[in-house]
Length: 306
Image (cartoon, rainbow, N blue to C red; front, side, top):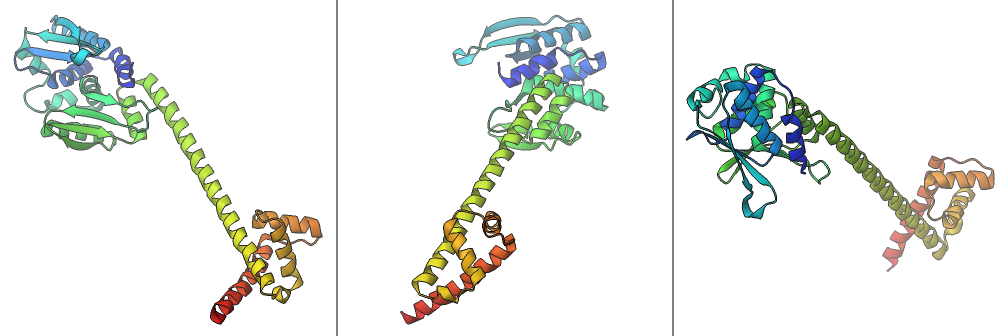
């Protein structure tokens, strides 16, 4: 079962007040065919059961249910619910009279959350957080309704956006934290816990990778710098000017040659331990810098002579 199906299965089984059921069913019907009666198609058995119960409990209407194999030999079954009785009364009670519902359907936050739950059940999909990207989207028919949905989502600071895709409008959320907030809003507690566990694991893994990459980059930089310092020392010896260095600089150059992959901190500790003369990282850097300056002068001289 996909993550989307799992979430829909969970929220379909939540107990809600009758007023919230009205808002929930309003979103479901609004986004399905009601031009000739009410016709709702879903692949989710739990969602089909919920819709059937909502019509029965709210309007004492028993929807006609049919089941068939999905398109293109899909393994999923398609559940079609049709209502032919009391259609005009039902649409009026659900606040459906145009592209957006009437205000009483989403008059307070509880009703708005119930509406978004119904909308999710029939028009949304959400990626499993184990995949490479976070994504929640609502696939809608017209721009006016898409803007209404975007405004409703952003009432809860979910930072949703609209994308025009062929003849459809997609309202989507891409931030992991915001998707987790939406799942809380519709009451998908188990899904939230799963989502957050995976998100935290992935964030921790990404942080570890970044730290490892950073550490490796630092190691590479240390080795590169050390190799340059070794080359400077060898150049001074080659040009027979090594004796221009003082004893402290020669001492550091000796240990740099001996320990070519050591960092400045490690080199200071080694020199302090082996010679008994304490030297700091900055002291090692200062002496290697002196060697570097002399090597640069020798390179310039060698270039001018050529």
